[in-house]
Amino acid sequence: MANPKSRKDLDCFKRQIAKKYNLPLFKTSELISIYHEFTLKKAKPNYSLEKILIKRPVRSLSGIVNVSVLTKPYPCPGKCIFCPTQKNIPKSYLAGEPAVQRAIANKFSPYKQVEMRLKALQATGHPIDKVELRIIGGTWSYYSRVYRKWFIAECFKACNEFNKRIRNQKSGIRNLEELQKQNEKVKCRIVGIAVETRPDYINAEEIKFMRELGITKVELGVQAIDDKILKLNQRGHSVESIITATRLLKNAGFKVSYQMMPGLYGSTPKKDLAMFQEIFTNPNFKPDYLKIYPLALVKNTKLYNLYKQKKFKPYTKNQLIKLIVEIKKIIPCWVRVERIIRDIPPTDIVEGGSNILNMREIVAKEMANMNLACKCVRCREVGANYESKERIYLFKQEYEASGGKPASALSGYGVAREIFLSFENKNKTKLFGLLRLRITDKTAIVRELHVYGQMAQISRPQGSANLSQHKGLGKKLLAQAEKIVYAEQFNKAHCKRSRSTKQNRFSQIAVISGVGVRPYYRKLGYKLQNTYMVKKL
Ligand SMILES: [Zn+2]
Image 1: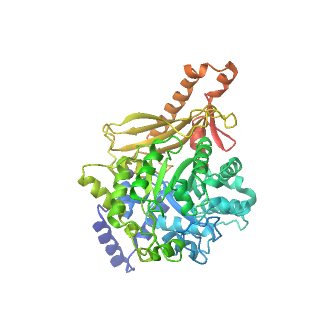
Image 2: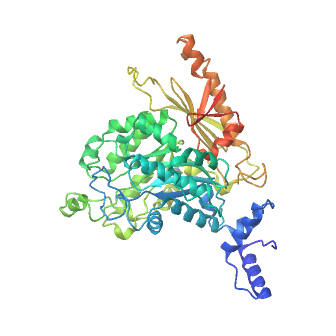
Image 3: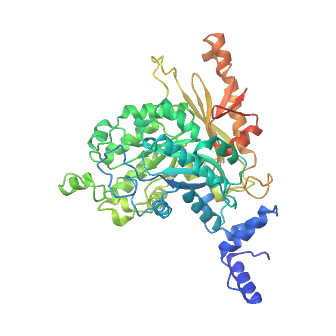
């Protein structure tokens, strides 16, 4: 192929070929598959060409491509007054959402949903060797164990067999472990799995099962941290259960995301802001990720009846923008704000400000006008601004989070500390990589290791082109974490305890690793032990 310098060159080139060989015009997606064929045969990747071919590079800027998969329609244990009831789709989602449409088109088959999404990503030129699965559709923990295991196995199978002619007709449920092992070696690896569930469904047994399935991140439907508001909206769980779930999940190494819903029945913008203030500062909460889904008033809900009786009024557009700006002002640097609005078709929303789809941009503009910028992880991820010559610095931030009650012998966890390591530029406006290390009385566990930048393919040689992945940042962060844990063995505060416990406690470090990332840790001296990658120090 000639070497086009721009999209225009590419179009010109396509026309030339068509004219010369009397063929219809090539589609860009066809060129991309040809390109992939070539690089698969170990031809050298051509980065400038890739840049022209890839339509929306933003999708893989976080280094990983997201694949959302919907579970089948199933009754939800909740009776939330704001939740619509539509036939044949999981309750908290409406038929207009893109992921829902994809699921319906594939009759909720996890295999086909994954395959379809991967094909679409590949056709638009995205590398698909690091996949983060996001399983949505309802309360994950409420589905039968058999269904859940089958669902995950099918997702692994779809990735393992992607772009291959041979298909295994057998369902994967019996050999999930085998499928996971296979996934460590295939092109399309699952580097993380996120599920959504309710705080009151999290317990030790559930956590064990989640780990067997390969889940690494849990999104908790928190909505509010006020018992009165939770009750008014018939959420069916308490603040206490949120605190417990957060602690259990973090202790097991999971990344914890909170879904928060400002504008609930019984709340006010002032109360909402106070709740956010609390989740960022009270050690009982402190989530790693945050989704802000302002309440959307839709028909077919109990809340709609209250609205008609003039007992409830949703926040206006201005109220909502103002509130989110205030929330963004107080976001700590270790939180990643994933979303601030849900893809609900604006036409479904009866009234209020939650139908603004470009909320993120509006809020960013408002903040820029005030000379402020959001400090969250997402807003600082380096993405396309990576310059190879930029100097980067290692930062360490320590905070207390989700410890056990000191008096409780049962939990055994006293103070628990989170150590947030990051590579950033000098003025901390660009984030190149991060690591979350949790240290409790009993364990030292890495909950997250992530390097940002345009996704570099796993097979590529180190140091090629301007990509911040595979330049050893991840390795450096991990080495730093190991050093910290090693030093803990000699920490004065811990030496008061008996010798025997002292010897055991920090002699090892564990990592919750996505199945597809296990080979990476193995190379660094880690071994698989009870679904975690563990290294003796
Ligand atoms: Zn942000």
